Image (cartoon, rainbow, N blue to C red):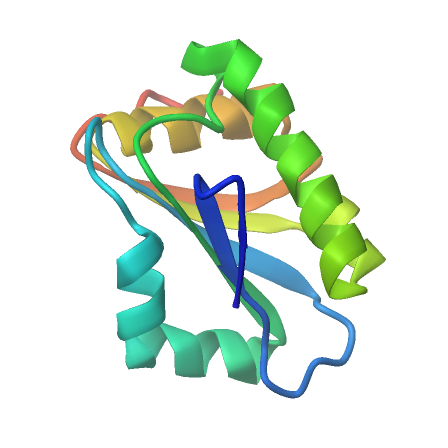
Length: 130
């Protein structure tokens, strides 16, 4: 597990080979998914089987609604890639699930960065995907 800027947390698969992608849980306004990814063993097991990392954050960000935050979060992924010794994180595919504002962020980020997203699911708050 590695935390950058105390705004995001990533859990790498324990086999620590090449990270094939990551699941991002994007919370609603004022919520925090960093604890969820560290306590949800079912998602940890799925991520481990697929060679995916788990990504959690506090508040908003990583959505086109918050365009300045996309750059911030991508910069943080660059930092995580450097600090964890996993340069593949910079271009790793994303599967995102978002709740409320996080659903909106997941759908708009997938529209904004379609080359990075392999899928998303919005729970209350997602926008139609073109």
